[in-house]
Length: 90
Image (cartoon, rainbow, N blue to C red; front, side, top):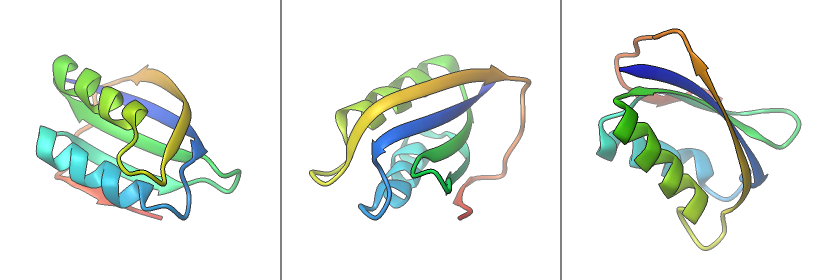
């Protein structure tokens, strides 16, 4: 298990990104949180097995809907953090 912080840039606010990211995370068995940032980016904390996190980032990059346009994902490995589930927090 590992935890990552993802900063997502692009057309990711006002297009259902947080809901879509939460649904993808839940389907992959990833726990964590997703929230909008004031600067137009989205911040995700995700915990799962390495292959789950790779799959998650791949889905985010492909775009979860026609309205979402991810330009960049900045991933940072963090100390393991446990979450009960995956929640939209803001």
